[in-house]
Image (cartoon, rainbow, N blue to C red):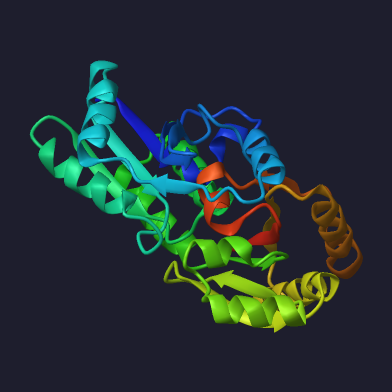
Length: 283
């Protein structure tokens, strides 16, 4: 029995600099009707440079078809893997989770494929895969791994601020009227990935620096004195990234955090002007 962990490309493991054995199932991003595999044919730094150079460009994304997912698993089978645990982007954010479920049913006679909804995205999603990969190397069963991941899922969130509303509008996350008012008042929404996997607006602030300070306050409230691990989530704005890192250092005493870029598929929906922090509470 050969076992392997798979994660969807939105987990950002293409950019993780340390060794792991996680395989990546890639989602597509479209630029000017040209399809690219997230993280393989289009990297984050190139993607955000393109968005800067072409501000009117509206990228699109597409989940893999069931047939493409079956082909991905068939390839793993040919490599000798018969048991697969897949950690996915939140099912409420993408149909990829359901496509993987359907593919797993088609292959049930030859492969044991378990699908775990992380109910999150970005490197928070990737951390579930890394945890599963570590437990797999320790000889843990899939049931033991899923039990640990289920507990982990209850103890994490992401807070992030959006400096530009354009991509939220273009991708239908914000109405045109709301966008007009937001731009007029220079509103900077703070959003949270909640336990259900939904992304919700939890506050609107009229200055990006104040928004980043507010995120620090929300981290304090969420952790409530408990020990936690954190990482910085960013897209394509180095000035915003540097300021947020300084904010976390000054207001929370957090330094030398791992800095995780959002993949092109995620960036297509939130744009190049997003910064945030992922939080995992310790036991």
